[in-house]
Amino acid sequence: MHVTITPIFAALLALLFLFLSYRTIRVRGKAHVPVGDGGNDELQRAIRAHGNFIEYVPITLLLLMFLEMREVGIYVMIALGAMLLVGRCVHAYGISNPKENYRFRTLGMVLTFITMIVASFGLLYTYL
Image 1 (cartoon, rainbow, N blue to C red):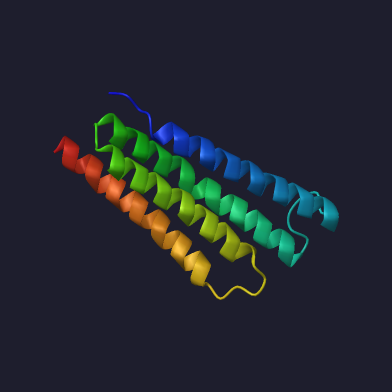
Image 2 (cartoon, rainbow, N blue to C red; image 1 turned 60 degrees about the horizontal axis):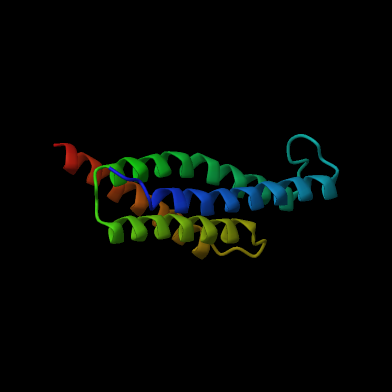
């Protein structure tokens, strides 16, 4: 029961989280808004990209780790981890773009939801 794939994606996602955190801090400083968003659109977008990441990634990483502990195939784990990573990158790009047309946000959420659904049902399948 070795978990070798999920930690790699956890590390990559942690780097993305640090980038989103840094960007939020930078925009906050530029806008001189220590708390809240001050009605600043760029800050609102940075806060939501950061917040949305933290709302979905931890539970999804747990699902992936539990699934990997059930000795699911390495290629399945790589595919799920890659979908989550790409989904979060695409979503962050989409929500950060002031001329957003929802295409990137939607794709990011679809990839995230597919990862969660496959991992959830995969876990249930291995236990039932």
